[in-house]
Length: 593
Image 1: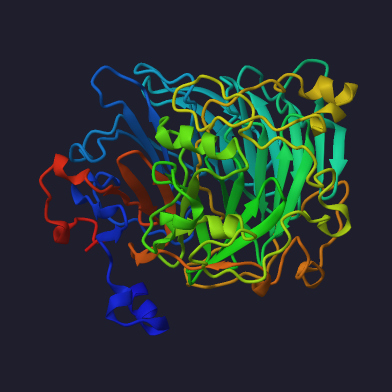
Image 2: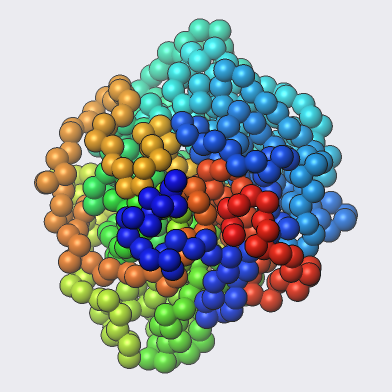
């Protein structure tokens, strides 16, 4: 049993209790057993060898006031429910839609928030054999299957997302290390696509599809070595962060197809990434058991966090709990050790934090203090919450209470990237993803900022070939960035802390050089542990028996899920009173006793 194994590995009774509540400075978070979603029979799923359980949300804005919809995959099955959250108990006997697949398993999915209505939603589903399906679970229709004959890519789909602001474009990543841009209006053709090189750089190449008539894929990105485990769009939709099995974070300008910056894990593959609500920071997690905070503007690692005992499968910011204090930095209240935070979810509604963050970002005099809240879950079944405070973000202006702040690298010298892996960044006037005027769209993640001069923007590099290949989507604005937490599972077995030395699938890359980890350690790509601040988690709680695969922050709750197929709702402080608390000790799943 895993429970006894973990007991042997390092802990007393306290370590191995499944927590049903935890306290942060804002109050008590409580697990709602009546709001647990799973397969209708509530039987724990035998997860060995299966793809990670994933959860997607959409709000259809129906008149009942209960517009949230939930999709999750368990093994060969895909479920679509009305999500009642903290308001009412889950009714598992009445899924709106249920699908069982043969020969392949769903691996990931994403709703189009722009087009969702109470009568129709567009849901993309990626599969273990490489196909992508477009379905409408409300109308119970299947409208299209992409890569049906697997002529485009035969490897597992690791991440699928609608391009922000678009009703028809979507991006798909595979374990082959390739990403493809599709348009739902086009077909995939009956023959394998032929490609023409559009742009290449350090460890990446982008090709256009060469054909007489427009067909899918519109673009093929080949990134790094091994599986491309996850990608995430910046809040304004202009930049794309990719994490790969080769241990690299690569951040691209999506429109101009330019590499903005890179970072290397301490060791092993990177499995997940997310953007801060204002687009200034990216947090990654992976096989080094660490969370790493990377500055988008400075293109450098500014902190690492150590709290997990195994691979980190999801990282996320919590925009609802990000703290902005109208006070002198010397009296910064965010240094308290109690704080909760996790994945920053694309459905967040505009709140006062947005305007205050924009105020914080519009001046150099620092009239407000900001604390970014983020969190992580991992294969060690633990939820960690982290605090990113001003003493880490601005180490040259000491606060009254300094934290674990060691020899921080000079903020004015961004990494050259060990042999030019960071071309064009050099700290020149690059617009933060979020600085441009955010589109007036509902549930947008974009936070308004003062504009940074963009005279040196890399998008001006676009030549005729690039313009012709990319102009179809170069002007897209953000609607919704749904941080869909993706982990890789193809090299994971269940033993905690297992590290695979195998470095994944073959990949045809136009230009790539094998990066020697020993040569990157100690460089700006991968600073030594003693060269950057080491964060400690504000809370670290064991909340499941099986590895955790989902972490989503909603306005009134946090949603987590484990590989047994149980989706749990944690009510935020003050949000529990909507329902009588039911006996959590008798949770039918056995996950949260």
